Image (spheres, rainbow, N blue to C red):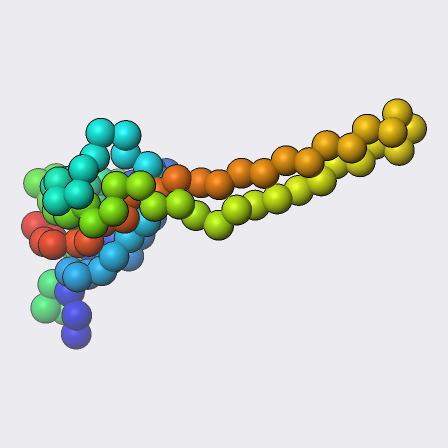
Length: 107
């Protein structure tokens, strides 16, 4: 059985294990090779033993290493057409992410 953890980061919950690659929300000051520590660990499973926090585990953390500080998501395009006033609006959005690799799960 593989060891894993459930972590809360950027308003989302991720089920991760060592070696996983995540796309977190953009970190402005991150550089390639930097370490980011995620402290809101909600659950860990190690050798079949499960620890559940209420709501988070004290003393548990997940260490990650920045692979790509600025990764861009897919382009989202849209159109808005208002018939009466003959208005046509075209808009687009492209989300920025920081790509990280999980190096250690400490519980």
